[in-house]
Structures are given as C-alpha cells and as structure tokens.
Image (cartoon, rainbow, N blue to C red; front, top):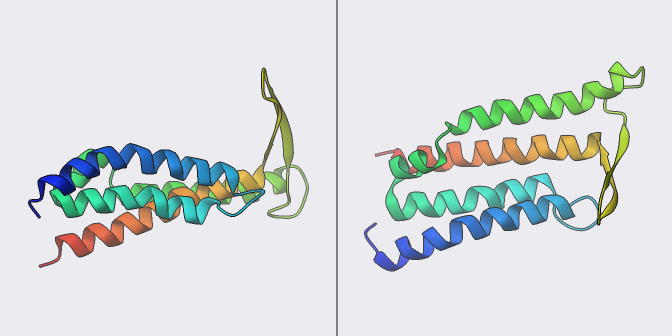
Length: 138
C-alpha cells in the first residue's frame, strides 16, 4: 500500500502501542490484561507497519525473526515452571521474592509474572509469524 497518511501514522503509533503493551503486561496480575493481550497489542504495530510498508520492511524494523520469539517465550514459560521444582516444590508452584525500589517501595516478583512474560513473548512471535506469512503469500 502506498498511503502517506498510513505510513506517517504508523511511524508514530509503533512506539505508543509498544508502550501500551508494556502497561497491559504490568497491569495484568491485578486487573484485566496480562501476557496474552499484551503480546497481541505488541504485535499490532508491526502488523500495521507490514500493511503500510510491506512485510520485508517490517521484518527489517523488527530485526529478529519472529520464530525466535516463539522459542524464547516457551523457554521463559518453562523456566517459570521449573523454578518450583528446583526448590523442591511441585511443577509450576508459585515462587515469590520482593525487590525494594527507592521511591516505589517493595515490588512482588514471582514465577506467575515470569510465566506471563513467556506468554507475552510467545504470543508476539506467533502472531507476527502468521501475519508476515499472510502478507508475503502470493
């Protein structure tokens, strides 16, 4: 597609939608949102970029083959499950720690958030793999 308006808008929306996906990811443990929805929102600007500029240009901007994101997401999710086993607990047991950040106070970090990160990255990779394949199909 060769629309100047779409191309210009896409350039501005890409970082904004990525920031919004990070917001959704962080909010997802206590309110609606989380890894799946945030992964879809993170893939949306690259899908839009692919429509505006073509799949080859969108892949160039992304810099990493989306299939690598799938593998990394699965690895992170598996790691979240194995942390409980390493501590002598059942697979996918919740393991929690606290990080004290000056000005923010204590922040809960745990395996559910790590699993959500794996889902986020995996959904991002799967969605972009499908979108780029459809864009490149003749």
